[in-house]
Length: 219
Image (cartoon, rainbow, N blue to C red; front, side, top):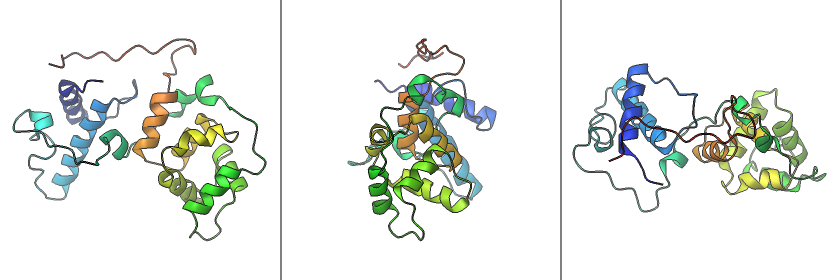
């Protein structure tokens, strides 16, 4: 998919004009995420008395078109994976695709038991697989439990996200709800949830979301 610099610039200046208002009318595109990174990084830099220079913000190549683009590092993942942002609001996941449960409950919760043992090993009162299943599907009411859910979802390899609902009675809706409830900000998780399961809540379930249209060309 082609990357549209004109769309990045359009969204960046919309963020400047709106004071950073997040759009809730569409799933964030790669261009939207790059624009928010530039706006947020520039704002944070100015608030701390630092000069943004030409690396990010309005004086960068991506926003101003002047100078030369910064080449990505050789092993640098895409910004939509690295940047921290929320999944879409929960009504976007209230659809059959996101709520689908692929299998019956694993009585041993083997995958969650393994993940908790590997990624929460040093935690006091580490939850069992059964307890983590309850946190993900029912919710949590203690700050310590929210912290452990957040740590798990932020720490596991992103390839594990599909396995969570393929190997136990967990839906993508459950994972999205846990991400919001436990304030999980991980680009890889949000990108996966948004692009695979989020559907505008004003559409019928059998409708296909229309493609995003842009006012400016990508030339």
